[in-house]
Image 1 (spheres, rainbow, N blue to C red):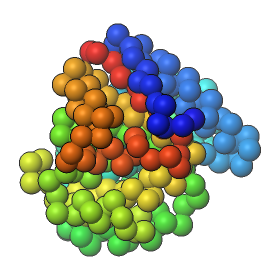
Image 2: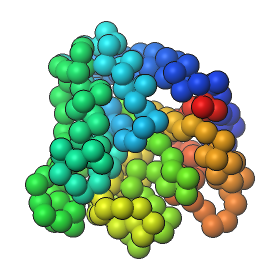
Image 3: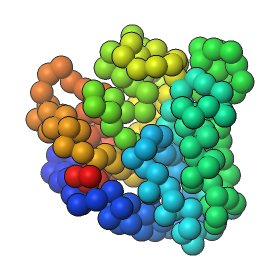
Image 4: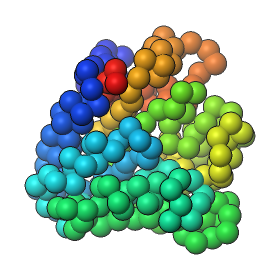
Length: 232
């Protein structure tokens, strides 16, 4: 697929979107297991992917041969309601998907800066991902690569797998997979909902300045990337 010719797959609801995307991701994970014996799935947090996670959790995949990890994490305790780790464990890694392997980004370090080098070494040793599912914020951020954080350029250009970020307009320090680690994948999906985010995405498509972080993934040509959008 040529990303320059990318079309947005549009759905009336997030439920309809999730049904279609679940089937697509399931096929790709199963194909990876058949080809290499194992599959790697990277997901994003927030409310948007919850219906997708619920569907995936009931899907017939050989989950014991799937490793799941997050694209980013807020630096909060795992029992916090703001923890992506808690979201994944309570919504995705249950039912049939309870058999999946899971790599948490929470290391127990007091600060994200101390955790990032440890995570970077760990994740750099993983093979190419099979599926990466990215979200988008109203400001055009994806993972925890925010347009207003001082670490953005590092996150977009370093060869490290993980960095710590400190957005000024969002709570909490974060750890985030970098552009280079996320692009080390067979397939990338961008999943977002709502008219406000659609307008932001149209700015990204038009390559309007200043460039927004998600544009680094949408406009690249190295990895097949598909965009899934629902109005509600």
